[in-house]
Amino acid sequence: EILFLDSSPGPHHERFVDLLASLGNVHSIYVDLHQVPIRMSYDLIFFADLDVTVDHAIMFPAPKVGLSWAWDLQQTLRSGFNVREKLVKAVNSLDFLIVDSYVVEEEARKYGLSSDRIIRVPYGIQIEDYPLRKHKIQKEEKLRIYSNRRWEEMYRPQLVLEMAQELTRSGFPFELVMSNDGSLRKQLIESHAELFLNGSCSWLGRVDWHQNITELENADIYLSVAKSDGSSLSLLEAMAIGTPTLVTNNNANKQWIEDKLTGHLFSGNSGLELARTIQGIDLNNPSCFEMSISARSKVLDEANWSINK
Image: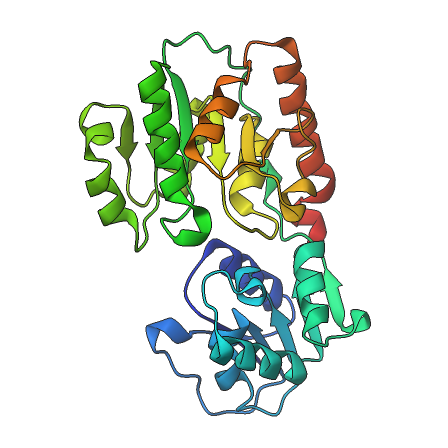
């Protein structure tokens, strides 16, 4: 009997449910939905989003395996003394911790977890669900940029919209398509209303898996300027499909992106710098197709969930 505690539903969660189901009977509980685990005898406690679920996990005496979604140990969505206190409590309760990148492993060690209790493997994607798109020559009058990260501070949607303003001022033809949602979405759309009214930007809301794939296939560039990442599922999806990527130059992304070989890295902190980077990418260069092939090969070799699980 396996109790799987998580904060809320998500694509990673369901894949780990399938994995755990090969070991036993899984009881999946979401703390953010105020679901309460049944008081029974469990053989294994498996808990993700560590600071949110630890108080429920330690109620049970069974062996415990933690699963980090990266933002918990990096404290990028939640921070403060109380969060750190709960992370320390979680780490001290664990028999093992599963992480998806070197960066998150380093954070776990800072909390005192020894390397022999950390399992590092990219969660990856079901590569067969992401066929390589046909090579896309950028013939359209407008460059189509797609960003699907959450409208939260750690993903810097403000920077993306500042980029759109700079591209508009320079007369550069583009179309920015943004999806997903978050606490900053309403105020940012209102403060940049002219971009959405003139057609330069559009917001799709939350998209399902199929719609996200369609957007990646149609995009000229996939964009993410998150402050930090683990092994980003969104990035791996874009790489697998062959969509050129432009992502933040951080250690987690550099595990996947070698600048101008498997994608493009962005090191700036302003909309102007991001706009200039976008303008400097030549999508019609023959090396762009080679980049897409190399990116997919990287995912196939290192982030194939069928193997990694």
